[in-house]
Image (cartoon, rainbow, N blue to C red; front, side):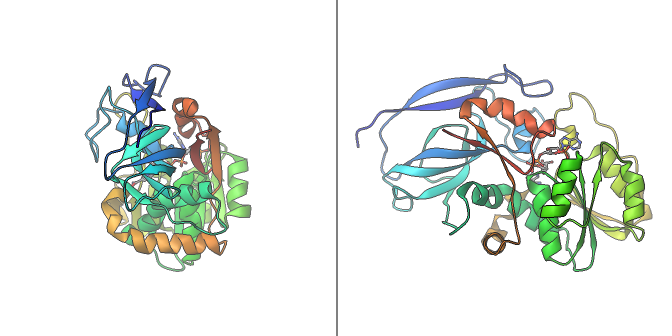
Length: 337
Ligand SMILES: NC(=O)c1ccc[n+]([C@@H]2O[C@H](COP(=O)([O-])OP(=O)(O)OC[C@H]3O[C@@H](n4cnc5c(N)ncnc54)[C@H](OP(=O)(O)O)[C@@H]3O)[C@@H](O)[C@H]2O)c1
């Protein structure tokens, strides 16, 4: 094969003190050479923007190697194979995986998997659901949280990618679901279109008081995506022997210094709580069963994923901040034009 093509890529240039800014990344255009045996060339169609992208840019001791300054920015991508010398990735097939913020990717398949066609389901919605958010919601509720029918579930960050699926998957399992989100519009969407039983707008309502009213017998399972005051409010109203699934603490990811709380930590004792943090990448063995469930629910209409689409790879750095300014509803994706 004799081809020379140009890839657009974002590189990590400077560690942000707080939010990602104009100095954080550097745009480069680089030639893509010939493929070796066992490689394929992927044209990226969608880039997933995830809260954890910001965590990878920190100098914290985290769950995987952070992105180092000077390296291409890492991200979950979905694309179409446009040239191939790899038997498992023929031209025309779709693939998704963990790679880089890049318009063209040469890969030997490491970190990738072929992405099956889901008849009747929009590709963006399928990727948004199946890549990270769906497995995280499913594994967090069932495998980590041990959800049972009839229980009361509270989820924070409820109108985000993970949260919106947590609510719907908990409803499928027969739970009662209360979502906490940051606007009346998001709360209305959750109740009207996603089947949530009740919602709390944390900007206009007292979350602890409202949880007390909505959960007079306490919360069985809290699925935490946010942390801070919102976590404290849920800790205040946990049922005896309730479970707290710590999926994310997005309110702390841009913090420059120490973060306070939680102040109701004593309820781990008083309410005899089980608290489990998890990272979805540790549970790849569960993916075949989890993805089969997600595909079934997407196809039969029980699961919906709103997609917040930003156009153009060049806009990815600015778009990442939408996750931290409540700017997205559902899954934040970048479509490469
Ligand atoms: N453990 C894992 O393996 C795993 C995997 C995937 C994601 N996660 C975690 O899941 C959470 C959601 O991630 P995502 O990628 O799906 O993002 P997302 O929920 O789609 O977007 C973030 C949303 O969080 C809310 N938010 C942001 N800052 C906030 C703050 N200070 N206080 C209250 N709400 C705030 C905003 O919605 P509002 O309008 O409601 O403010 C924002 O739209 C994150 O904490 C992430 O780290 C964990």
